[in-house]
Image (tube, rainbow, N blue to C red):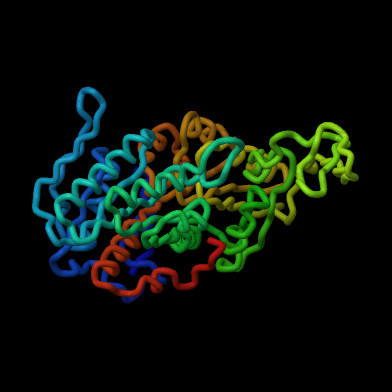
Length: 396
């Protein structure tokens, strides 16, 4: 079969044949009756993804109406019987995150009260996944959302590339965390000319494990950017030093907390807290005369990616790609990418980004509807999901 090429007017990388890692999988199986697929979002991008999935499954998209009333309330109307069926709700997350969450919650609850047997949420990008750790006196919002989805009636979650894999522990229902790396790896092999002369780059030490996984499977070199411009999540205060430490305080041996005044009992002097200081910017690894491929799971605010590209250019990289699963690209990210040293940004269609593509010609889209449709088919038929994780490491 001839090699499929990207046409100049089309920037969506979809497969006319299954990827090598899915050879032998019959994704065009309707799996019989007893299940329906609904779109929980009224946006065109979510409906388009849902139609791609149903076309691969050989079923029709469920009949439902999702809209916003004049007062801003979300209304969902299920227009067919779902009693005793397995229901799959496709929900992508546009810029209006909170509206999308309410649409999903209301549709799940409507299907629950309509006596559906199982309600499975297909959420390619899980919202609020960045808020999965305690920050100062905030809250772990991702845990709250997990509880809300379970209480609304969802019995299973299908998602892709969670920001932190520990998020699965927030749920008391099964969660299948699929991976987009096979699709992105195939894009690198088929669409990047001379990719053998490339090096996989982690824009911060935190992303080194993911980059190493890509490099090992592509048999390529690895480089890591380390230095002051990078801002790690681990550097943010999490409230554990509150109240601030006091110099030369004494600790009561029986109570175990510092006292502002001298206590009659002998105490312990706390050591001085030394602030962490990042070294000057540096690149660990050789990128001179090479293609640099930066990999990450989310690309939202792009300042760190743009800064990394400038450093790589200074170190001799002649072409720079950015590969990420979720292309949120909020605020002025498209214009910053357009004016940057980055040659191409490759993301999947887990998040709608049609508007961003109009503002930046460098954005390319990889279609992941194939793996979502296969996951739906396997769950409904009670088949093992392990096949979808073949040759995929925990570091992806």
